[in-house]
Length: 635
Image (cartoon, rainbow, N blue to C red; front, top):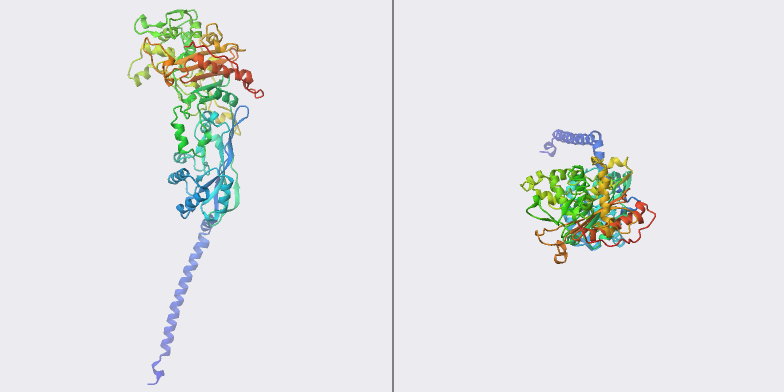
């Protein structure tokens, strides 16, 4: 059979046509799918994918606002910002963290402690794509090394930031407080928008209380980045609003004076301007270098501070709670006169001790053998315990607590002081609730001379002294003088709502003030040596607080007692007598007698303020003080 008879041309044509048709359908279907997808991407979701594309190229970065500066009352800078270069790492942009850290350690010689701190920060809660600090305060050589190796380290940047710096560090550490890196708890608590890009927050003192005013308002910038996340150029920028600057009532010259007077001791000095309540000095010694805490203190440095027996981290001026001793007697005198439990003419016989109802335990006077017949003026001037034992029993705890509350004891009255303690103002209800015991007459006897359960802080003593100086008019203690940049100072500082202390006889204020004047400038005053030669009239009161109790017939001998078990020395004063410009409270831990140890320090503070500094005028420099040492007679 011929070959042609086996070939069916028509059938092959039909088969070819069917195959072409199938291929065409498949191609058209695929083209349709592609066109539909393109329509979905380019038309329906154009804006969405444009935004996603821009996010790969353009990023929004927060700009931390410069923190507000802090000045003293004479515009001396107390807290500033200085530029610091730090190495930061964005973990999400680092392909191999271990390799990157190994390279960085070779380049920068990063310490093990910095590396451990970095690892802890990695494990803590943080915002995505936020940089984590690895090493701070780079020098020029380290910055140059990082610039050379920058291309090898994706996700690693050298960032410049403004970091808090305290020029007077140790002297102002307890008064100003300090800022530190935001920790995990603060990160959850703080506003994530307002604190975007911010690494530091106020931890204590003025820095903490006025955090909102000092922080400012965050800014933003739109930047173009490459595939490695490095910034190529800034497209758009909204500048941050700096925090408000603060001018404080504090005078750094007087603060320095207080610190120098206490150097080598443990104690606190608080000075207040009676007419305003402004805190002129708030010194707690020993102190610490606040700059160590800003970027992160080392483990060894913190251990040395926290384990020191002198407790430099403890703010004695605000948190130290001590028995006030005889410094409470002027307030007790005011209470006794106004409640009619004593009079100016009333006298008692002091044989050197006091007995409730003339029997039982003998409560001893500080002067062995007693003072003889004494009235209220003499009892204050000579610090006669027996007179106040009798007065305390007559008044009772209810009357004493009522008046001491009006002087500000047992509560925090400062307007803008962070971390202050309330002390302890005992009442019947307090003892029943805490001790499950009734209030005994002996408790009132102890309370009348500032012993027993009564506890006060140096700030409270200075506040009560200012109330005495003002004849009952209240100006709550405050650190802030004015906010620079805020709508108003009142906008950032709480309102003073404490009521004045009004007496039945206003002349009683002058009587008690004159008796306090006799303490320092009278013939028989317990602190007469410290008041000798003063070119101004002033008022004061000594005090001694027992650290441990003596047996009924045991005498106090400082030479035979370990130094840290000796009495605390206290003194309060205000000056001048008729137009007070300063009220001072001094406590020297284990200092012994108030007249011999604390009174001379207060005299030097008053001399510095009234004579050397002209009550705050900045023109005249501070000169050496010539006050003489005090007497050893005490209350």
